[in-house]
Image: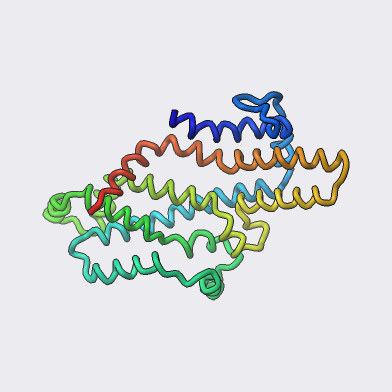
Length: 273
């Protein structure tokens, strides 16, 4: 029953994207389209900027996820070590920003002063550090890696960096998958940061491009009348559902391959210390 409650809304979006909006509005579509229509997808794919947006989002997601893992995983491991010098001070340095932030305008000014406005890196560098992910990784390392493993590595002449690369990372596939999936989903669905920091149309991600397309369609509806308005309204509704499917399908296809690591990593990383 629980699976039906979770899966059906997703399935309804898919079948609604292939259905006549009037059938959806009148409640005639439940489990299967009354008649198959591809108009929404056809009109959506006619928009040339959607392909640029798709490519941009793929690059943002891949590079942003890699940078996030490169930053947060070592930080989590370092904080998990009992012999870290100044551990309490460093922990406070990470935790305080979780409760107090400068706000949008100071953040914008900082990003602008670094020269990142309207650049590719503005969506992958400034917000790559996640204190929440660092804490989850720290808890994972504390509960999953016995201290005896580090002691044995030291006896064999293994240094800290070598130990982290050759032993810690191979044993941490679960937490790597969890944080990687969280980060990838966040970057893929992000549009607000792009709206604030990117005005160059060639650098805008998919979500922002889809938003612009839908807003443009709504504007056209306001200037049309009669049969033209009815047809535009029909296409607009179908494009809304098609846009949801197009924007979520890649992440939904990725999740089954990471599910086993995701479940394991969440449970281990959530154990109270």
